Amino acid sequence: MASAPALRLGVNIDHVATVRQARGTAYPDPVEAALLAIAAGADGITLHLREDRRHIQDHDLERLLPMCSVPVNLEMAVTDEMLQIACRTTPQHVCLVPEKRQERTTEGGLDVAGQHAQIANACARLREAGIAVSLFIDPDFPQLQAARGLAPNIEINTGAYAEAKTEAERRQQLVKIASFAQAASEAGFQVHAGHGLNPENVAPIAAIAEIVELNIGHALIARALFLGLPGAIAELRQVMQQARGRLSCDDSLASISGLSQRDS
Image (cartoon, rainbow, N blue to C red; front, side, top):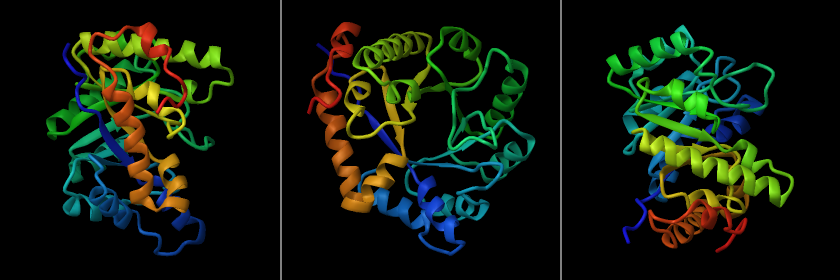
């Protein structure tokens, strides 16, 4: 039986900048954190340049790009300002996400079906600039259908899974994500996932063979307070790899949903 494809880890450095912005200092430097993460084995670096600049700043992106030896994934809202920044700086990847000023962090996925024309235009502009585009969407099949032909990648919002209050709810969300990932892969998308994932809940998501990349930030930065960033990355990697190693591409959704919250 064929083994599942390797699972990449994108390290999100936003919350290093959150600590910096809380005091208005020049430290801690998220670019330094990115370089440390790369040395510790990160496959990519993710950062979200928000419209309100609450954490990552323009100069962080501009400094990171020429220094980064792995792909940079810029999360951003679908606005003219952000599209201009992306087309000028040309990161390797852009993940389009919804954005609301009052939210603590990204809440929910893009409404591709309801904003199809706007998102299609953004994808076309980014594609013309040579940037690979990903759409951050909830595991809802109408959104998948609407995303067809717009971008080569989707990132599944795992927030509802991560925030589940009961085991039954968690398993329900997991089966939903696994089914969605399978359909997305069959439709030709490269499937990524992220939001709310941590060492305690990542194993069942890592065990979904169609998912090829996880983007994780807040949990890594929080854990780094105790283990250091290399230690936090190593811990997360171990859980991901152990979950991945048990699977083949032919594993059923039932077996995936049966994995424990942290079966390592």
